[in-house]
Length: 241
Image (tube, rainbow, N blue to C red):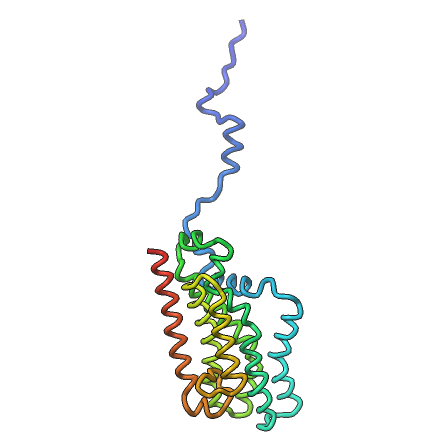
C-alpha cells in the first residue's frame, strides 16, 4: 500500500480569504495633523476663493496690478498717488467682501460645525480661516503697497495694516457669534462707505486721507482687530467646551 501524503494542517496555512483580507488592510493612523498648519491655511484659502465668477478674478488682478503698471510706466511720482489712495485703495478693501463674509459662518452654512468641533484642532482651524482672509486682503492690496513704498509714503503702512486686519477680524467675529454673514456685510459696508470711500476721517480705517493717519485712526482699528479676533477665539472655545 502506498503511504498517505498528508498536507499541512488548516491551522498552519492561511486560507485564500484570509490572505485577501490581509492584503486589504489599511495603514494605522497615528497622526491626524494632515500636513500641518500651513496645509490647513492653504485649504482655507482655497475654500475662501472657491466659487467666485471668472470676472471677479479679473477685477482682482486689475486692482492688484494697476498700481504696479503705473509705477513702471510713470515712475515713483507723488502726483500719481492721489487717485490710487482715494479710489483704488478703498475699492481694494471692499472687493473681497463676500469672500470675508463667509468667514466664521461657513461651518454653519455647510452644516460642518459638529465635524470641526470634533476635530483635533478646532481653534487652529479658526485661526487658519482668519489668516486666509488676511492673505486675500494682502494679495489684492499688494500693488497699492508697492506704490506707497516706492513713493516714500511710509506713513500709509499703518493704514495698509489696518485694512488687511480689520475686515477679516470683523468678519470672523461677527460670523461665529451670529452664525450669519449679514451683520458683517451691513456693518462693514457702512463703515467703508463713510470712511475710506467718502473720507470720513474718524472711520477711515485704511488711511485714505492724511488726516486719519495723523489722528491715528488706523492704530485704533488695528487694536480693534485684535480684540475682534480674540472674541472669535473665545466663542470657539465656548463651542468646544
